[in-house]
Image (cartoon, rainbow, N blue to C red; front, side, top):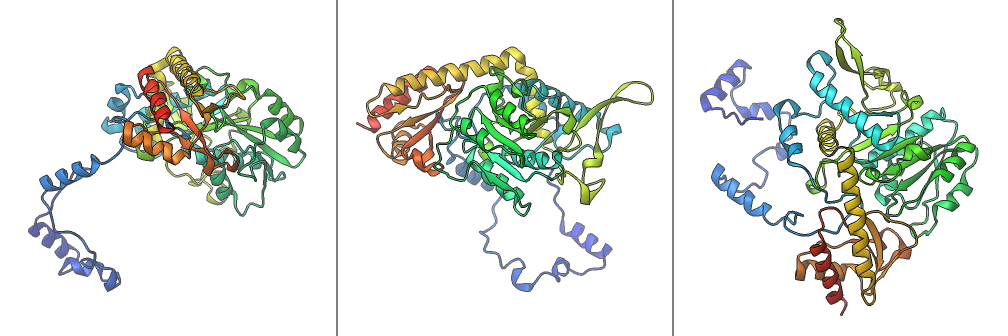
Length: 449
């Protein structure tokens, strides 16, 4: 919003209009001890001085523009085409507010509709919303959708230990007080593989949730798990990486009922942790149970193609106490960025990006596996992330990488899984050329020599 200064004369006129003598009278209801100028603020600066100081502070940030990064674990460094920022920077898109008035919101509504269409194509599902705040909240909403789809009669959730640890924590936070039984991930050090989860499914199970690729980067065909869930009348929920879906079988093809995930890699950038995008897709029969906004296609009174928010009876602005969602603003701007990204790359570009991630990650894994003291876990196929057992504590290695080579290292798995102490999760994307990977390998060699 533009900065509009007021002169003393302007302020006096506004105060006179509302019958006050001073600005201080506006704050009489605020306790005196909490009023300005009790705040300890520095001396005033000019605009020029403030901009210089902020520039100095921002230069202290560690960014992937200046440092090679091999850190993933939920947020990865992917290429953002220039067209994304160019289009989302247009003034008509500078809001995430929900477009309730279709007659003046056709551009925004169509953009969301196109986003939903591409998410459905990517996941192999029939419907999509737009959208959730991030992958974690989309995951939690998927659990609530499964409970609602089963008319609240089933109260058991099977949650794989290799769903993102923070996503699992958000699920538990979201559902506290709902009297659910969540099993499968109780032991943070568990090495439970997906095959053993199917033994937990019974007539009380509302859904089974797995990640694809999982938190350790591994993937497999999950058809057998979907079959086991459906045989017991439960839903299959998959937390997916949309970049991986550029080359892997979409979850809809192996029987998933709901597919959610983090859309940060679809043109959003890292952004110091946000804003991000939680995508949510499902089978059509659950359209009235899912949370978030849904844009539908229709025709206007003149027979022309048009777009509107649809199935609004699910929403809190229509029936507050019975709504399936209390999300008041969708991630419209980030969803628009994702739509532009997917449209710009197209099917071939999405596949090429995924293949670059896959092949570069495997090149890095082979090179690191040759280092003395390092062991790559090859127990399952992996996509862009893989696990490495290291000969020294991960923090020490990462400190060396950063201080000596300016490399942002991997994620310390020991904090999330007690059985993976001294194991590092490395992420390699299309943004890591072979030269950077070779430098990482040499730095790891030196760090442990």
